[in-house]
Length: 335
Ligand code: 13P
Ligand code: SF4
Image (cartoon, rainbow, N blue to C red; front, side, top):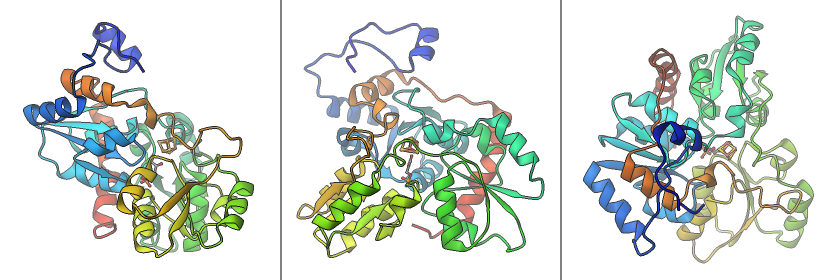
């Protein structure tokens, strides 16, 4: 995305979603970002699905649980969140007094979008005796209607702590929900949402790859559909997929999650081969289009101008904080 226009007025910026300004092509953006972080006491938190340059300059790279924990403990004045909107929102919910900025406010999430707050309120009203466990990939307005937040790292651990006679609504990811039902034996009422990236993997292509690489374990994220998960040797969050690849003796792995994770897996294991599981139609749709809206250029301008910033209604923030705090307390020690 070329940043060649003059900086826009704040009201236009809110529409565009990121700061636009000419950048001197001779600038070393890595040095500039480091300098700005130091000068402003800013911390850069990045998700594994960010582009490699952003991962390389981050102060912390992790999965959603790690990022939430890091956001809860930082003493920086500014949190620069290289991830998607619901992640930056979570950091703001935990840090109302800090400035939380996101390189591109348009970096949303199809899964979060699949659960509109009004429709979810009506769904909850149909199940008044159920508690609500929501995957962290949801908006603050959904978190505000939730009892316990979870991530893919701690979801099973949290569901197992709910008394057997307590009915549960699980939202918004139906694939993660179905996988949890299978793993825990708990029946749950599922919201019918999904992630566009994790639904794109082709079962047929994975079976073909397995035939060509019979010793290669298949590593899959639980946001994938059941027809992909049934071929997986390991199912887990991005951090658990990364860990498995290092701890397992195989030299080749088939990876069914967003392609950004391959950067750290390859850095951890230079001698191993990681094959991204192919999508069904040959497109590059195992790149998350939302995550990839953030670029090094937007990150630099975001830090320089301290914008765009996450803002939130205080009543919603307070209601959304409780289920996040419950998650952090109930998943101590989970990695
Ligand atoms: P985790 O990194 O927590 O596994 O989540 C994956 C994801 O889809 C984030 O949007
Ligand atoms: Fe949302 Fe899927 Fe992108 Fe994660 S990979 S941010 S769940 S659209």
